Image 1: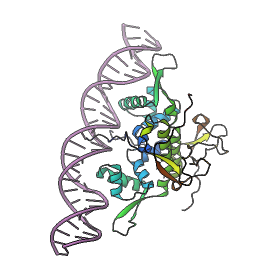
Image 2: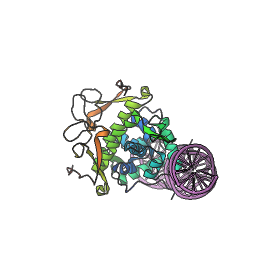
Image 3: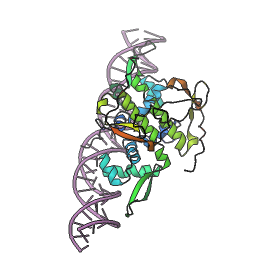
Image 4: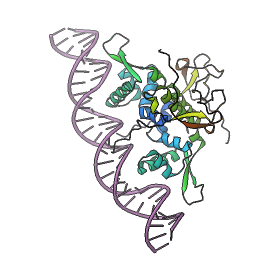
Length: 157
Length: 157
DNA sequence: TAACCTGGTTTTATAATGCAACTACACAAG
DNA sequence: CTTGTGTAGTTGCATTATAAAACCAGGTTA
């Protein structure tokens, strides 16, 4: 078997996420979707990737429950791709990627945009990992415990 | 040009990060490095990837300033791969990936470990994006402004 | 109805990935 | 000093994924 070894079924949740999001285009498609793009052609023009690849990626994202196909909002007979809650949940990952580049990129002058809060127009704070009682945690302050995390009941949107 | 289109030089900092971290193995290698692995053989056994691939990935991570080759800590003539500050900076990205899986994975019971704070043993809080004055921001509360972010002066370690 | 746009599929070429076999060096034992 | 074992790769070849370009079908527009 030479296929690109799948990480599906891995125990590590990082590997599980990467199995879904870890290819070259998926995260960029989701980024564009968060910026409001929804049509096949919009994605294709914005990302500049081949249409056959985009077809496959979009289908995969729909299959995994990250995007959803809905009738076009403008009343035409076409369809649009919109994010599901699971898709919106990717937002912090994109923020983390953005902030890593902002902090460590070797040529930061090449970065074209800064993320600011809409109300004040000021750059946002760095994502920080905190304990439940509010202490800031570095990677040395955490450890892994066996067993699946209990999932908070999610509101029904 | 048929090569896997490089995102190098993109304006979007997310694309820039993905250009470095966006392949199947790099983030998993960094994850392992954060867990204390440092030798070629350790990575290879842990990840189960082909040695030629590992060679290429490690070299790329060293070239990009994420890993560093240092003389082995046990006094042998071999070398070890250790994370640079830039490498440690990837930690929040891995946390975000982990938390996305914890929250949205379709089969959460397959997740093997939970991240807890070492001191209290309790699960950590979700990463939250905040404005400089402390308001929690959702993706709808932010916007992009043109121009590179100013980078905070970093301590000289 | 003809031209055009949208959202694809097909074809074909090249680059990345994976396995297995092989090599080079370090170190340890006999 | 020779043989054996472990580490850290390299090389060769098969298979897959990715890409560019051509093609196409249904909806929309003129």
